[in-house]
Structures are given as C-alpha cells and as structure tokens.
Length: 493
Length: 95
Image (cartoon, rainbow over all chains, first blue to last red; front, side, top):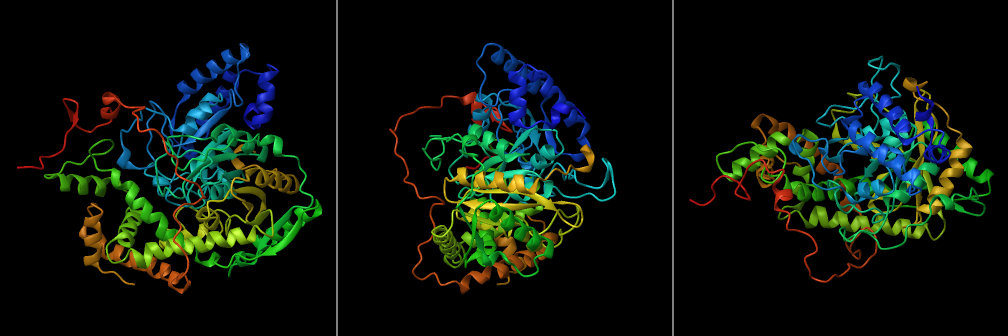
C-alpha cells in the first residue's frame, strides 16, 4: 500500500505545496487502491480518466499559484449526487442509463475548491437503508470483514446508506467522500467503518442536484478519517445556493480554524432517554468513557432530558416514506431512466415503477402513499409532524442547559450481510440514536471511539445547536484525540 | 392497524407501482407491522402543538420573477427513453 493513501487532507495539501508529490501521483495512488479494493464493491462507477484529468489540471493550477482549498484531494462521491457526464444511479435500476447534464451544487463546489473525483460510491437504493444491502448494484462489503479480501470468513455490512463512501474512506481508496444523511446515513456507516461522518445542519449544504429521498431531512456531509479533514471538506461543500430554497444564506466559517482543542467549561449534555432497553454493555461503557474523556479536559457533563426520543423512529418512519412517495413520483419512465413498455400510459408507469424499484423502496413508497392517502393523512402524517415539533422542542430545551450532546452513534457494531433482513423494523432500529437529530435538523457527527468485543469499530455521536458545526467539530476533535483510534481494517493492515 | 391484500393492491395502484399478486399478501403483513409500530405516536399529547413545517426556522426568500436558466431542450431530452421532434414520447392518451 502506497504511503500516499494513508495521508489525511491537511497532510496531503502540505505535501502538494512542498512538491513532495504531485496531484497526479496522489490521485494515481488512490486509483490503484480503488482498483485493488474492487472486491468491496464500494464503487458503482470508477472514473479514473476524469480523475487523472482533474489531477493534471490541479497540478497546473498549483504551478501557477492558483490552487483552491482542496486542490488535488481525491474524493469519492456518493452516487446520489449528480455529476456531469457520469452516470448517476442512486443505487436503483429505475435510473438505468441516466447521465446528468449538470453537477449537484455540492460537487460543483468541491470541484471549484480543486477536488478530484475518483468515482461514484455505492449506496442503498435511493439512500433507503442502514446496511447498503438494498443497492441494485449489490451490497458493499465492509473493509473490516475478517479474512482476506474476496475470501472473507464473514462478510460484514459497512452500514448505510452511505456504505460505499464509508468503505472507500476506511479502505484508503479515497481520502474523503461525500455522503448524505436522512436519518443516520452518514453517521451510522461512519461508526461501522471506524471513520468520521458529519451531518451538517439542515440547510448548510445545498440539496440541489442530489437525488431526493425525504426533502425535509436530506442533508449532504463529509466522510473522512479525521475531524480536521471533516472540517476541511465541509468548508468545501457548504454554502448558500439560490437553487435550493432551504439553503441558508450565512457565511461559511473557517471550520478548521475553530478546532482550538479547548473545551474547558463547555457543558456536554447526556440525554438519559438514550439509555435504551437492551443496549449492549460495551456501548454503554464506551459512552461513559466518552463522558470521562471530555470531563478530563475540562468539559462539564450535565444530564439532559429529551423525553420524546422513544417516538423518534416512529415519527421518522412516517415522515420519510411520505416525502419519499412524493419525491419518487418523478420516476415515470418518460423523461429519464428505465422505461418498460406498456399498452397505456398507466401501464407504462406501473410496469416501469414495478420493475425499477427494489423491495425496500417499494415498501417505503407504499407506506408513504398510505399515510398520505385520503382519510389517513391527519392520523398519521399530521400527527407525526406534530410529534416532530415536540422532538425539536426537546432539543431546544436541552440546549438551554448544554452546548453539545453526547450519545452513542449506533446500537451495535457492524452485522453480517444477510442478518436483520427478515424484519424491516429490526433494520430500522439501527437508526435509533441518529434519527432524533435528523428530525430536528441539527448538526451531528460520529467519531470513532473504540472497538467492540468483536474487534469492530464503535462511534460516539455529538449533536449541536443549529449551525453550530464549529462547536460540534471542536468537541469531536477533543474526543478523537482522547480516543486515539488507530486501528486499521484488516485489508489495509 | 392491519391492512389486507386488497388495500395493498389499492395503494400500489395509487403509487402507480405494479405489485405482482403473489407479493401482496407478504407486503400486507410487512406494512401492517410498520403501521402497528408507528401507532405509538397516538400516545403523544399534541393538542396544542403545531405540525413542523420546516426543519430549521427560516423565511422563504423572494426573487424577481425572471427567467435565469433554461432554453436547453437538448439537455432536457438527452436522457429521454423515447423522443421525437423535440418532445418526450408517451403512449397515446387521447383517442
């Protein structure tokens, strides 16, 4: 394995500036790693030619003294972001053959900052899932799976829905990746793969050009191997966009400059309702360890209450499918993607959508259609939106008493491909700790904090006030330093 | 709440998704389980609570009502499964 693929963004930028290596060399090292890691199935589309072309342009810019803040950094893009001239699948058959003639705002921002695209990362179909098992392009295998790549003794999931992104970053194929998070799709795979995943405040990154799942929840964010890299990536992704009416017009701070390492006097909320029944002892222990680490450097743990936490998953599983059923109405076989011939227009719609959507997506569209249908709207959707207000108020009240909230990220380490497949609700429980912050639109990060008894990574989550990514990142970096997580997945040891 | 096979067929039609009959029974079971799971929300007192309409408090912006993009017929049609003379083609809808 090339040393270049072990670098973080800050180190790589320093090396490029010193001319220790070129962007071409850096990108080539990652392309080699990407090719070697193909058994993981982390990428749906590799774009090596585009990558080398972008790297070459980056070297030219640097030679002319015109480099951007991420110039030459090789990045994997979740295949939910539209990319000009590169097929974009959302992990679904229904987008077969779709090649966007435009870039999402977030990817355009990254290219403007000098980022280099390695390829499009695998994901759960339409970002619906917590395991990357629902992708029409096959599951991603976690780089943490035991055994030799391709001959694993147990194939583990990388988490989801940003499973390809998480696997690519953990396997040192990509220096960073974009993810999207609707109910935990950045943070849960980050926890499973031992990397950092940040879901920014709703509105911080533009949703324009990202295939929509649940528009009131979807938010793009970075997946990286360090908190500092997450700060750098977020700076490259975030910003106001007139094309997204919910994008927020406020300046993008220098997130890295906010990483002072000083959390003295900060109050860290510990929500008592996150001690859920049946939580594994090792997760509870890691959470206590996290509290102790922050206390040791001068932060002050305070107990807070988020009383409606136990209703968050049920709320989410009404709101998200309802919005999905509406958003996914656009896949009709007429304007782009798959088309199945039908005698009538109605047949064309039904045949196309019947053939194009996988079972999880179909299940969620049907639930969403049901809860929005005449006679049920008030009982389900309206009630869920009211409970969502209560969940949001819980956080507002808690943040009167604290500056950030610390919780576990996921209720377990990674499970094996094939497990939890029979019961959708069991799968949904993966998101029990991540969904509440999504419903409230709050920034939240997962930081690798240790290993479970099975030798697999576990993350801790920090949740912040709206648009206070700076505090979230600052506390996260302190946690990262205390945890000193250095373990590597077997395939890169 | 329990939904039956006929209801699955009805919402599948509303969603314009062809669901083979042999899948309907199983789906009825899965959807019923999800609906039973979410029914816990009825326990929450929401009489005085407004429904959430925005994840983050902000005002919708206004902008001048002017065309600032468009005119890209080729780009719009580029991914069409079937096209003719600058239009999307669908099965005949008017006899």
